[in-house]
View 1 (tube, rainbow, N blue to C red):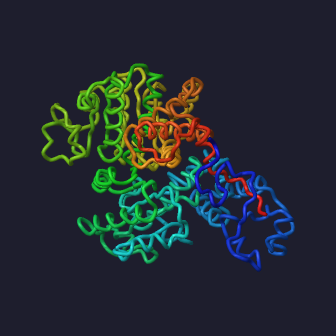
View 2: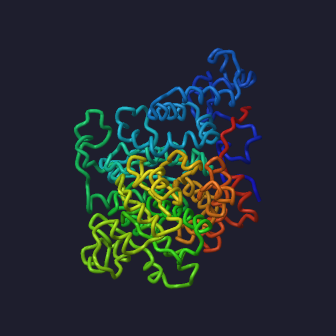
View 3: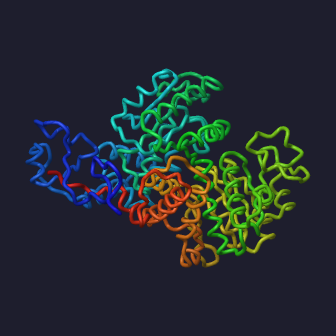
Length: 570
């Protein structure tokens, strides 16, 4: 069974590409509104017949342009900008003017435009969001709306929402508290759900929950777009979130995927723990990051040999990303070896700002760090930890740039033939070390991946291609898998399935270039395979509600994917 998803009102899925669709829901005297509607506007691509049928004569210049020609022109224009932020603004303007063309550009030029619509440029966009703000691109829910959140949700024009990405702006990338200006993140994330995962744009809803900000620069900025007050915490905060989660379920049903994005550590773990049993929730910073890093490690094993359990892991940074990755590695290790998870955790060590997390510190640790407090004398510095624990894998999730110093990386190189070094903090300026440093200090032996993209490195006549451990490999396909199976809960086994599916996409020729992640150019095919694996796991666990189960899940996933090709209007 492959016939696109359910209730495709706007003709967005691949299965409807050939069908004629009606771009109106009311009677019309002029086509002027059609040109102002980003979902149906095609600019100069309206055919002669369409211009007649839809009262567009004279509202457009006489030339006809294909979507390909429009794409060529816009890519040429984008490349004229020196500043990435100007490219970002141009892309956002395009999204508000012509939705299909925006996605066509993004899908066809994914490697070039991904850093523009997402990390690292989106970070700068959020910092300046008040100044570059033009039109609202999602829903803003603030403390003022307490008691009325359901009504606010009903103000959004779309009824059938499948994916919500929500932030409270407290920890945007490595940039800290950006309050209401964090909206750039859900908007960017959801454009990737569509471009890379094929979730239709009309089914995506970006939301920012504004409970104030502790960023004094923003509070004193005359252009700041959010509430001018310090952050609400404790009961006031949790009551607002509880009302929001209840309203989401009431308005959109059990099967809407709510992705928590860029919440501060203390809230991120609490919210995931609180709602994972009652709602369909996913935290990309904890679970998405973990899933993509695990995929990178599973692929790396084919280069360095051994199983997950044969290696020793050391993390710098024990926040959402660090503990999330560590837990998923331990889960997969436990699944492979059959050993209890407590035993598997012993292979994994974490460091925070106070040094190595060890048993003697257990009383003072936050709950999410406690499982990682192993027996060992206290260790203050990363270099001492590397020398003492002799890790084969070093992972940075600290949010602090330059913390993998030359002596640390050289120590890793002295201990291991092929040291694995993942510097995952975003944006680029916060990366623990650069690709060039990792390769140079290990004479090109390191297996390296980073969170934000680095250019290729020439070393001793060899071209080394750094891997990018980008969550965009996982969450779009993961979201699609959840949507097409009608899953009602997210389970860790579904994340493991996504990791395994991604690792399987890395081929021998990728390894030859030093790649441990497949190139992004093929991301939609990869997402379809991840979606199929995730959906299969949901069916296996009895969590899927879309019945009967399609025979060929990859084909079904592909048929449900949004395509940005223009539709013909009757």
